[in-house]
Image (cartoon, rainbow, N blue to C red; front, top):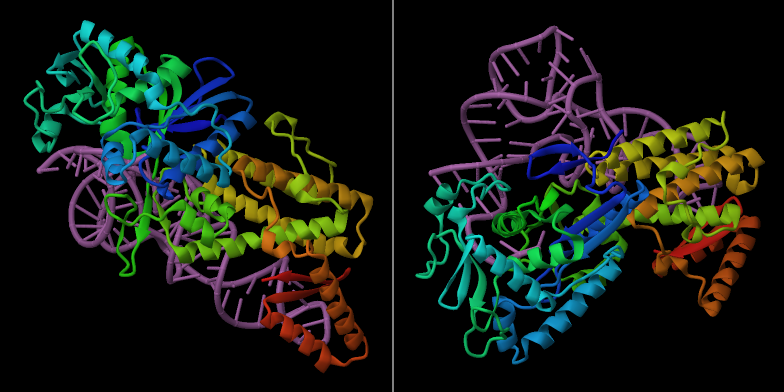
Length: 498
RNA sequence: GGCCCCUUCGCCAAGUGGUAAGGCAGCGGAUUGCAAAUCCGCUAUCCCCGGUUCGAAUCCGGGAGGGGCCUCCA
């Protein structure tokens, strides 16, 4: 089954076929770095990081660019409030953003260009647009002339006349049409400015993305992504100016991710955004929940659907993910190997069906196919996550029924088991999760604690042997009060925090 | 006013014409000295009304409720 992608431009799912066979260029709009990142900023990166992982898995060579907008009205305002420079503020907030991405295991970004590094490219585009009559200079500003662009509005299915009807666009004497947008803004005192043929000024909001995308990835991209809220006006304008400039399609596929929603105490649901004032900073969030849980939350819904955020939901999710980590410990007990250090081949075609005839392997292969067919269908990570849980259950069931933990498995059982675990690893790598053990439950790092725990466990087991359950239960109860849970397993007693 | 989307078990969430994945919670069972962990089983006909079809959660029309964009926003 071919990989299919929903294209905002055509409003339907299409077979994915990049311009150059085997290679994919992807551009995703990044943040304006004037405030610390909130979770909403992470939705796109996590999703497109997973998209990139899957495209690579499917055999494509992917180049992924995410821009940093480091000059704009909000930055200028905020810098003034903080009594700092735009540059300094941007650097600080960029560092915060990059750090958040790293924590959420977004590792696939090839390049992160800054808008201010591409002023020349923007000027070239503006010159070209003016030459072709798509843009005009007016009093130190440069505007894009919407009326000259015949298919303006095609991305968002908008009729320019309708736009004007409801427009609350800033009225400017300088504009020819109300819908025209600024490519270049003449400088005002105290603002950062760059030289240009139209005098000193700074870029408008949309031109930077066109300049950076085309400079780094070429005139036509394979995938352009971003949040649904950027569809209009940002992407519409980006598309208009880019295509007017090059005369070629700007991007083959446009992908838009759903926005995060926030449910308040009264049960009202609304988008999470700075303008609503209900944002949750990533740094604050990660103090409460593991980064893996947050990443998982963003992947457990289809990317085009809105994601409803709440603490309860994260807590619930975190709990269910612990089941996976418990299984990884179980795997280690059985095979003496660390799941976290396993490496599954990240090429789809390298999958080997494993021992033929084994019922368990047949089941694994079925789940593997199911997982991939969901991912093939417009990156349905929500559905794929469901298969991930199914595989976990299948593995635990196999361990139980074959008595693997008690050492009763045949070599054939163990081979099949390894095949299944490696498949789980493969899924994990595609989703970018389960790379590290949960710290709190690892427990054994501290030698003294480990020794004391072993002492208590030995004492309790001795009491159990003597049928002195009052003492045994006393020990367990007191440990429970200390948030330590004991597990009596076939191979001996284990413990964990939590 | 214009454009668009959503409504599936108590909660979250897959499924886009062939008879309802998965998670959390709940209940029952296996296992256990009792627990924990794990496994097994049980719990929905898909907001309402009408239509198309042999057959619809899935398509069409109408209604109700919710959300988004049109202005900075990931």
